Image (cartoon, rainbow, N blue to C red; front, side, top):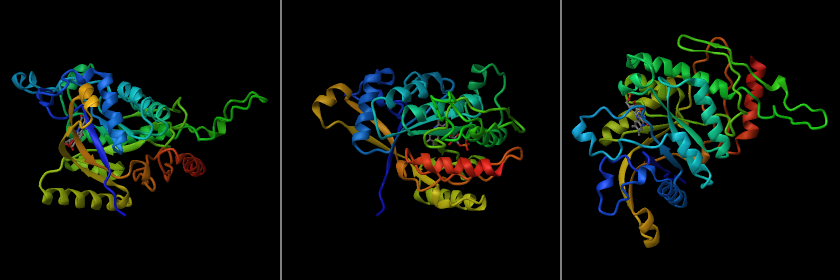
Length: 345
Ligand SMILES: Cc1cc2nc3c(=O)[nH]c(=O)nc-3n(C[C@H](O)[C@H](O)[C@H](O)COP(=O)(O)O)c2cc1C
């Protein structure tokens, strides 16, 4: 039986720029943890599969007269927020945006691995390359990298981050009190990546994520954005639009994935829709009042049958062929994958 799955695009309470003007809205909600706890618990109770926290690394570069009216101008840093929200939820997926242009792969691998452990296997990474040129000057650079270069770097970056997640086998930590041996060095893999953009030794100093790899999400729309999505994403956020365009986008991604040697059926494409959510419970309504979310029907967060195999293997190391199921049931399969990769390298 086919089921529709839903994800909420929160930033942190809405993508709609004017949500805060609704007569029943809580305009301070962006930085109200209490409000966000209410939102995510409502979503979880309503069987949503994921809560997606977008992120931008600079104030949006819009004309100031428009910007001063926008309720999306500031929002929480995603990992801090999602770590807090992980503590008050049990099942809902927690997707954070992280940039391959302005962040370091070791940082990103650590943050998602930590979130995956904290949430018991519910983390997902929305890979973005950051289009706002103002971000450059917030990170000590004078120039923004051009679009093609950003995507080429993102492709290599993805391989490095996922390679770092493979650093320790699931059963590396034996913690044998009698012998005093905490972990088995034979169950550790050192990445030693040397590529065009990145030079990263590894291993990651965090135990293997619960899911093996957190879920990979992408939202590229350009030629290079679609290619990255087709090669690495398990879940793709699509902006929607006329049905003919959406169908063409879907066909294009699936065909690119097949050409890249992946099973197109494993990539879930999630068209967006803007919905208004009204509270029906009066007590809850008093606290949280009103919020709007861009809902994205998503494929089963917890029911992906298997991971798709990455296609571009850096020459310096051998990739495993991931087959983990998710989220928490991943452990045994993740160990088998690690073993297979270890045997091959
Ligand atoms: C649903 C959705 C969510 C997105 N979230 C973010 C985000 O959090 N941060 C960001 O910098 N870009 C975000 N983007 C922008 C995309 O990553 C991408 O840059 C954009 O779709 C244009 O495609 P291109 O980069 O291939 O030109 C999002 C796009 C969509 C459709």
